[in-house]
Amino acid sequence: MRTGSEGPQVRELQARLRQVGHFGRNPTGYYGTVTAEAVRSFQSERGTEGTGATDAATWQKLLAMTRTPTADELSPPTERPVAKPDERCLTGRVLCISKKSRTLAWMIDGRVVSAMDVRFGSEYTPTREGEFKVFWKSRDHVSTLYDTPMPYALFFSGGQAVHYSADFAANGYGGASHGCVNVRDRKKVAALFDQVKDGDKVVVYW
Image: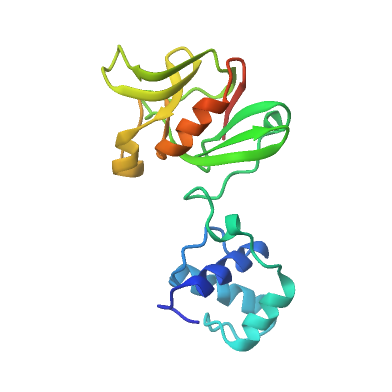
């Protein structure tokens, strides 16, 4: 495998490199410059020539140092790796929301039940940080302030809520919310809405 290669084996290569700390992203299945640099780093650490191409010797060394990647490791549920949970997320039922990784992890007693990509408010309408509780659920909510749909809204701080955003789904991180936590995946947030209860903890942190 080398730059330009693509497919399931490249995805496995990336997942295994991530296990040993040489690939800091989610697997994509494409062998680009980032993957080549990760392989080069792995090779140099092992005392071999850092070519950036995965030859048989490099592959065998990597296999010996790693385990078979799980399905979630090969195809993670979020675009970015889910952040290490804040300590406040490790007990009870928690919406654990990392601004650094831009992910939401729905956790119960320290176990990640589901995870999803999220985006936040702009610098003018920032999403509040801290520990909160869900105090209101509104399945088909429409903002009275901005007259925009907020499906599957889970309110946790004033008018700020976790909810599905069609704009996020269409335009990605090119936009921002008015302070809410936007979720890109409608199916995931719909399932989350059905599972979360009033009083469940919300932690927003860096």
